Image (cartoon, rainbow, N blue to C red; front, top):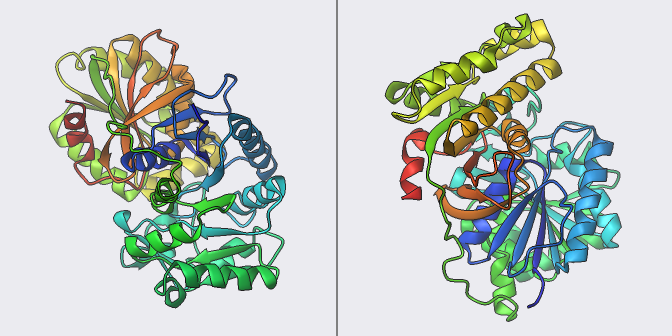
Length: 426
């Protein structure tokens, strides 16, 4: 059996499941690991996604972890590598997208990679180097209020330039519209100019198809899951990828159902509100955490009284003003870590009470929850909404039982996501 074709490094857990779900949908048998594995690569897979919790780590830590992931994927025999970050390019002037991408280029001994977080299916498009969320520029979309990576500039060329050492180029939509040959010609010209990266415009899936085709054979590609969707076709055309019917098939564990939400995005806030109107809900109050109240015990006692009858929601999601107020009292980092830790402990407690189908909203929250549950890897199953598949745990977990998990990026999913997700498991 030949080794995996595509080795991916994702900078958070929901981003990893987003990417893995896209690859499964395109017929690649895919697994996702939680951190850099301490075990050999699984057999009979076409793609492996190593999901890190590096998006908001200190840049040096993010680079170190990403290089460890690359080495493991190289040992697994992967032919091409993909660095996946959020479709809203979540980062700061210090990184971590630029420093990690540069380190990966250096480690692979190559001199160029495209940068394309566009995902038109989720209304993330790039035009003249500017990232749009729907019809709004990134910095006017609500992402300017992100508690950890506030995005206040929609110009990705300018944003990436702050993070890397070499000049950043642009492959504009006029070039992309001419197709893959024109894109490759522009790449060659940028390389001659000494540019190691180029932001690539994309406003439709057709644009991404052409960009993906132009990336055939490139050792490193970087972007969101939208671009990754069109890489499997390259392997299929050269005969390396066979059709994998049933790539998204899962063996689903039976059990109780719950939603845990830590994301404060406007999308998740709407999803929380719809869930609250239909099912029992418990709000985690950061001020109570700061006082030292036993919020975990209170939440689990409440859940035990409700979860046997119907799905329950436990959430710490709040509007931007409430988040800012909490951060002023506790400090940004302490507030985030407190909430993540409590939601992770609650999730572990829910599983012990019999929850076997768990939805988690928020990238940082998902990372903390997966770690608390002792999940070392995930099998990727059917898509709920673009970028969000159901998964099941690989191997043993802290509870000793398999778990079905839907790890949702804060910005993804329709308003009724929490309500309809269970239907995809039936």
